[in-house]
Amino acid sequence: MQALVFSDLHADRGATQKIAAKLRVADYGFCLGDLSQWGQGLEATVDALDVGTQLYVLPGNHETEKEIEQVCRERPNLHPLHGKHISLGGGNFVGFGGGRERGIGRFLLSNPEAEQILAQFRGLTNLILLTHTPPFETAVDLTGGNKHIGSLPLRMFIQEEQPHVIYSGHVHERRGTTDNLGASKLVSVGAEGILIDL
Ligand SMILES: [Zn+2]
Image 1: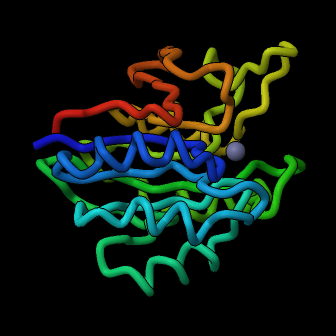
Image 2 (image 1 turned 180 degrees about the vertical axis):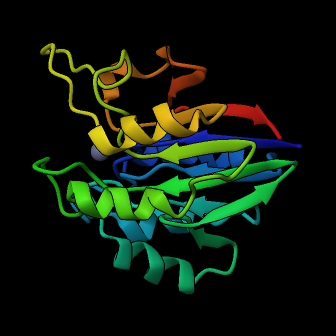
């Protein structure tokens, strides 16, 4: 079984059509947020992604958790993943969406809020994290302007719980970049997506 992991379509029609074609032939899909541009174009993007494959969706910092829940409620193939986990192929896939404290956007988590969400997943084995924002001070949260814009609570969770892999989006210029944090592998995913084995 294979899952398609992608992020940051930002209501780009061409990129959405390309990813929808890949999604159609995948077993599952994970969308890591920022489907819209500040909330605009969300409906059209999720309609294009509703291709019959079960798709788990996070809010980024461009759309809210409520907006994602609403579009999923109306489309049975789409499922909200923020603050939830699902077991697939022996892995526990945890969803953590939104932007970081003092970030820019329409859905931002304070550090205590982020800690509270992540705390539910402590002790889970075979952990794979699907996040919009990457962990702080890594190769995958570094902007072109040399600023680290990742989440500190997420970094601390990873150091303590050591998930196998963390797939993140958000930092467009880091698409395709990988790094390690302790025993955990970090992978930055973009709008073109990557296929992972389940
Ligand atoms: Zn973002």
